[in-house]
Length: 149
Length: 260
Image 1 (spheres, one colour):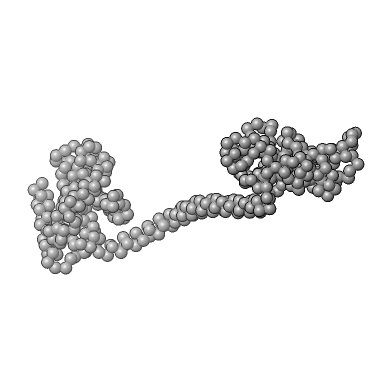
Image 2: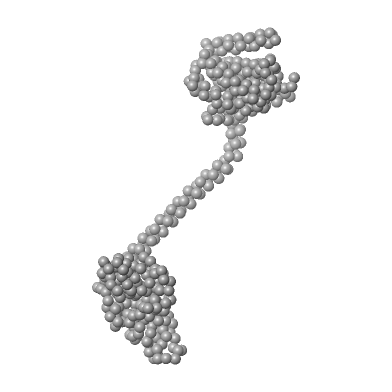
């Protein structure tokens, strides 16, 4: 049941990601899912879940398998560490961490694609897009909190 | 904990190796089949949104079209009105021109630019005056008939005393019977034909023209027609009401002619 619910959420996240755009920039909603999976389910499950989302995203992006797989897997794993090891969740910290994770995810994907395939955009444009995506995701940090241990 | 880190390390190594492998060979998409599912869903979503949006979009387009057509219609009506005005003006000017050609006493033609501010007098202001040769007591006619006389001249403007004014009078006669009398204003819409003997046969509809005997108005200018004849009053003259041909509400262009 839980997996089915996650599958539905993932499905609609991808649909939403392909349907919404702000300033001609599509949001990066999948990193929010990976982040949430990490803080709710722990490192390993977060890593697994993030990898799964990344695999789907890579397959849909028709570039090559890997950039999203790695970045989302890392997001799932490391987001769990943030609240279990270093910080106690507060809304402000949630917003900051969401911005950092989205930014890091964008940078990783951009770098990996630049290294293994070809530069998908100029550095300036990429930074602008990633910055806007980070701001778009920031409000999610207010609501996505870790589960009670 | 170290096990988890090892797991992460392995994950990073595997993905990097995978990417390195793909960079030299064909790209690999294990879940590519999902593309069709998403595309189908997007198509459905698009159709669904379109079916909702479409009627509103059509309404908006119709609304916009309606607004545009209304503006166009207003513009066309305005243009039509202008054309009509030009046609009417053309007709009036033609009438004036024919009057000018017929009338050898022609002095000037003028536009009525205003009514007198005194609501009790039937006086109009016309846009010609001394420089155009207009003098006091000159006759004023329109294409329909006698309009009145010049009651005063002030620079480039003159005052037209309309036939219905109480202080207006002119020598007149009935066109058919040639009976002479005096046409005078009543202060309202009608005139009165005075001094027509009781025994004279006057019918409703008889036309009244100027006789020229007053040496002010040239003879033969149509003034109006008899609208009412009253013989019931005891006296030697009939009470004859005359409706002027010239309608003071439609007076726009007039011609000033020399004294008879």
